[in-house]
Image 1 (cartoon, helix red, strand yellow):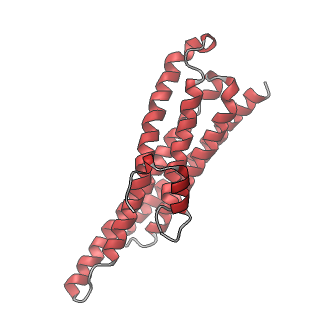
Image 2: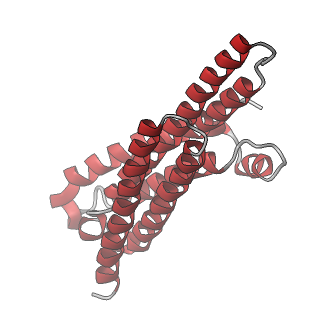
Image 3: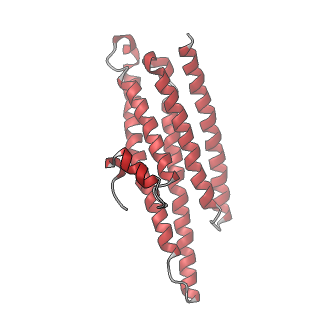
Length: 212
């Protein structure tokens, strides 16, 4: 089923997610989780902008808000991109394989589709990490009444990073290009560790505000 998930109701998305259809699946959920984390960043910014107490940080908060809005749209698009990548891969597996030429063409197209199905969630993970990074300054310069929302955004964004990376892992299992796979495995480990570290940094800052 093809439609704009940015205009889909929550109930409809969850109904499709819980069905026996393979899409939407984990990759789309990771992207949507990242978009929700970005929306929480925007909320904290909007609860801070215009308040005299935080006037000295107004431009910095506005810059964070602008980036959060861009990332939300990027990640909403990634919900559908993940579905399209999976559908393209399925189409390749259905190609004819009666002759040696057909088998070779099918093999090449499957490998190309697998790489695309790896690239898509990795880009999602990178975007989710950028959302996580946006939370770094908010405990210090944002409205403290919304600091718990910073924590929720950080948890959600980090979980979205890790979730998207699992989709990288599963596709790499079927890719026959060792150099490509090793490169992705190295990058995914680094991104995963960065996300964990950044989340803990944000949460420590949140705790400092909560217990000030």
